[in-house]
Image 1 (cartoon, one colour):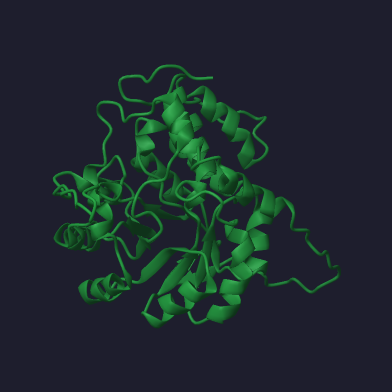
Image 2 (image 1 turned 60 degrees about the vertical axis):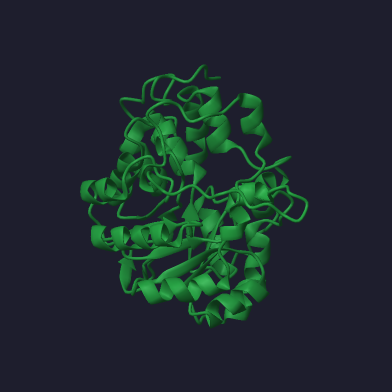
Length: 348
């Protein structure tokens, strides 16, 4: 379903005025979201890189893991609460960073933050949000707001983003490592996706452009952007800039996890970028146990990729995660019903 982009690039149908009674699980929002988004926006927000093998594998890997049931355990006094970096959370679920949420709903990141606040959940705001980080923080003030950071080729611009996040009240930085260049997302290409007028990465407005670097044969590699791609040295640099906890996102191997902890990371996010950057990576849940075993509880290990139900959260916790980040399901709730849809997805 869907059609041409509207002027704002958002819904083809208006958001629901009320949550339908037939919504029984988070997955039920997907069809409603697709009806309310243009074909181009849907391709962007739901697609993956290449043949989308990793995108599918994130979900299939959860489906392949059985639960081992036990009975008659003493469960009185149990709860789902936890503490991360001095912050109390009622449950181990946060909203993952997703760019350009105004593609899904006219109120975009502000509505997502309001929904998260209503459900008392954490939200990680994307560097490439379509709303200013200050606007989101002002609309939904919360100690549970974290800022996802791309280390930009212009390091001074990156440092300015860190200062802005600190001043706006964000309480942690989530540094994405696995996307120095964008993935080859063929579904977007086939749909002719382009950001519509009025939607942009407002937090990087005014960022200096990277000059093309010419290799030995004269051709730029990825437009020269890899010349400014982050390295392990940048982790030390970021730690010198801020006292905020720094989580490194995009960890997919025990070797990188060990090096991240040694480099002073406050936490890790096991993630393959939702299958959107490099296709044919394993599912996040498949590599989690080895990473968690190697970390040995020295820092919290979070996971994203494929979470659709509470049993998926349980599986991730059982295999070593401290908490999970949910991405596409809350975007579906946002597209269908705005902030109430986001809160409902979290509760489901």
